[in-house]
Image (cartoon, rainbow, N blue to C red; front, top):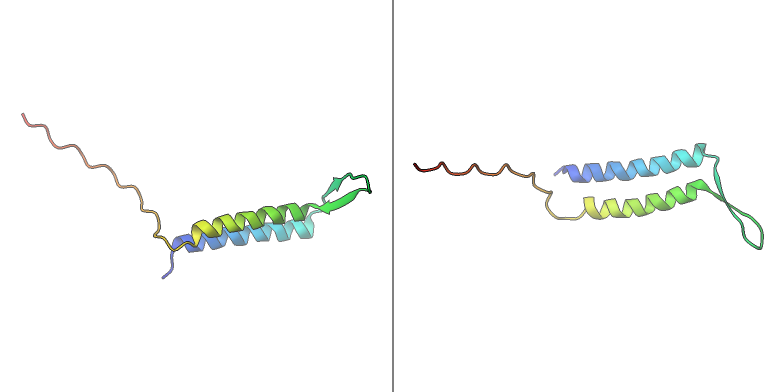
Length: 84
């Protein structure tokens, strides 16, 4: 059956990778790494993709595990009436 945690987990993962796609297509930034052998230019999208990969693993672990959905907190029961 449709469960909301699966829906939101999938939506978060899809949005992370869409952001990587947008930055990869539109972004022009680069990291410049100075090294003794010469400069290395690394596109910014690689760093964003690494973070999206880590984020996808964390979200997938939380959203797609087979445990039950967390229950909403119930209001505490009112105290019994005072005898008097």
